[in-house]
Image (cartoon, rainbow, N blue to C red; front, side):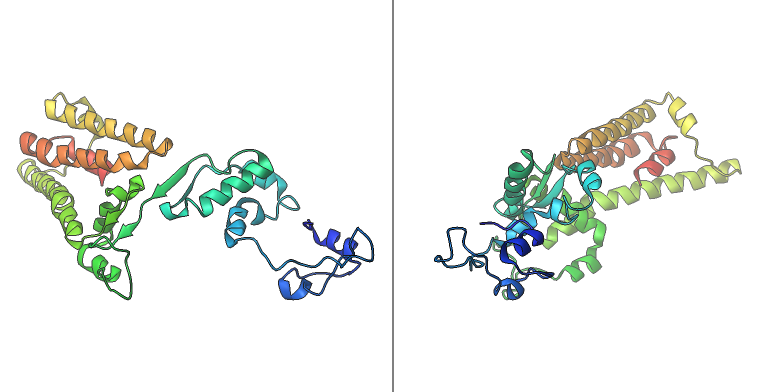
Length: 277
């Protein structure tokens, strides 16, 4: 027998005023057997649900549904997405799906974002005992949060594949992406300063003038930027997050290596940087 509520437990056991359902408070409560007084009374069984059962009940249990917050729950179920590591396939993902299917005959989420596992450079699990990984604080101090973040989101982890973490690859991200990006911006700043000195007036960026430019490099880099923006919106809406960063890196490559090198101080660069940076 599975007891559904405190009210049912009080009715079947004859015990009133139950407020605590923890084991130490209910173990002494018994329920007379429906088969007659000659049969032993019913007691709480020693076996309990796996702890993942509680995690799988999260969407409704956290709101005390269906006893409270009925409208709030039904307005937000199923969730737009959930996100967790690949190791949750047989844990949280599984119990969420099983319990929701049993209760509502539908999944509890519409999209699932799964990340792979970050391993030590030797391919083993990161371990405090083995100390086979660099301290995170040291990485942040040496390379910055942005470099670490970009390294991780452009790695196989976003495709639910394992990543062997290598400190030199974080440094490589700075050299390959951030330094060219910053240098391109500095190049433009120098061009603006030179232009202001020659004309004796303050340069004011004008998106309208940039869009009206017929310079082939201006037209091309604007088209590339707008194409990237649309691509990112479409892919994010479809929860294909693993495609976004490669497209962003390709745009940065086009900006720093093609646009700057071939067009010099293009009229489009300042409004472009305002959007990109």
